[in-house]
Length: 295
View 1 (cartoon, one colour):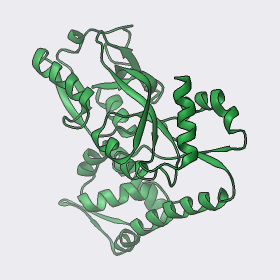
View 2: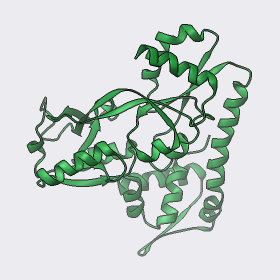
View 3: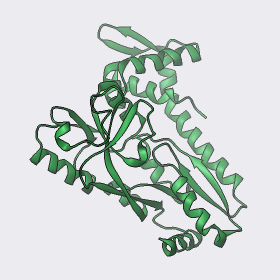
View 4: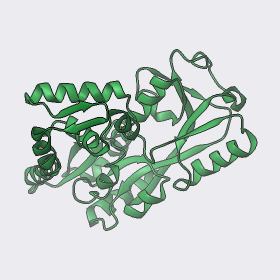
C-alpha cells in the first residue's frame, strides 16, 4: 500500500549518505540515487539538499521522514486486518510466498493430502524478502500465515517458529553470466581461488559455519565477504554488479536473471521444510501429521 522507496528514503536520511546507504542496503549508489530522484519526482517535493559534506533533509523531507515509518507500519497492519476480515468466516489455511520462499513445495504437498481437508480453502499471502524485515514476517506465523516453506538452519529463525523438515537443498554458487566460471557445468573449490565468495557471517547457521571453517582452514586462497544474515534480492544484485561469487542453493537458480547457478564438487546442503508457529492450532497440527505420513 505504500511506496517501497520510502524504505530507501528512511535509510538515506539515517545514513546521511548515498554511499553508506548503498552499503547498508546492498545496492549500488547509483541505484539509491535513482530511487530518491524517482521518489522526489513522484511526490513533487525536494527531499534532500546535496552538499559537499553529504546530504541533509529539506523541511519537506523532514515532514516525510517524520511520518514515513508510521505510514509503512499502518499499511502493513491494514493489509493484515484486511486479510483477517476476508477470511474470518472461512476455514482457510494461509500460506506465505516470496521470491526466495515460494509456496510451490507446499502446493505439491497440498495436492497429495488436500483430500483430507476438502472443506478448507488456501489463501496465498505474498511477502517481501527483506533482510531487515524478514524476522518480523517469521514472527507473524500463526497470524498472517499458517505456513511458510523455506530453508531453515538459522538459530534465530528456529527460536521464532517450529520447523518440519521436508528435505535438503544442495549448496551451489552463483555468478554473473559474464563471469569466467559461468560456462562451467560443475566447479571445484580450487576454481574459487583468488575470487571473493559472498556468504552469511559466522555464528548463525551450523551448515554455513562448517562450510566457512572448511574454506578458511583448507582454502585460504578464497576471500570471503560477509552478506546480511538473511538473503534478499539486494544480495543477488550485488553479486551481479560486482562480479563476486555468491554461495546459494539449487532452488534459487532462477531468482536473478543475470546470474548463473553452478553445482560445486562438495557435499554441503541445507535443510528446507515447513515453518509454522510456536503455538499452532489443532487444524495446523492435523495437516502436519498428514504431511508426516507421506514423507
